Image (cartoon, rainbow, N blue to C red; front, side):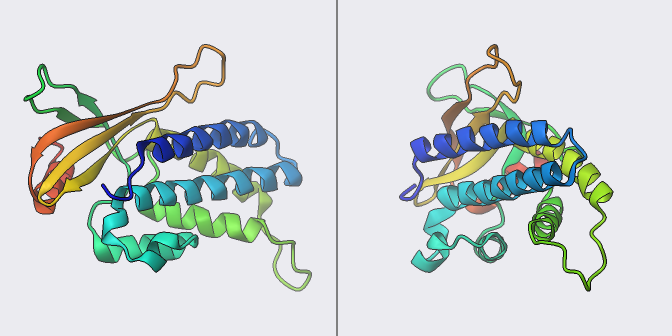
Length: 215
């Protein structure tokens, strides 16, 4: 809780949405420049997702790890320090009263960006953002085009309805639930972030809930 700012989390969510919408537009063109622009936006989006995880899990990292900007290192450090840090595609049904328990409903992970997808997309984007070396094999730009389209779709599925577990105090955990409308129109709903208290008193209990999809 010490490092979590819901305002900062909200600002990052807003930036992710803006960059996803931009990437969506760029990704419709097979021109190499547009493909590179799409890859740049995806790479920045992946960095922002990693920064969300730092906000939600800052208490588990040391000062150097919290300040790291290298996505691969961030993910490696979080994997060493905690089991759950990645956004969990889900919906939450609010409790009927202040003492009630929220209901977590998993949305499934097959169509959302997995941690494996995350790592592969980040690596591919890095390759695209370098100029083509004349003595190395040409990058398959058609393949990058199709992978970028798939990655954008998976990012939307990951972020549009997700929950993260938050350690509020010693042996006290809660949920942070996020909804993002990726519709590119004036009628799009504003993003929402809401914290829910829960009867969760250990990280293992939180792990079991996320693994089983039950509260």
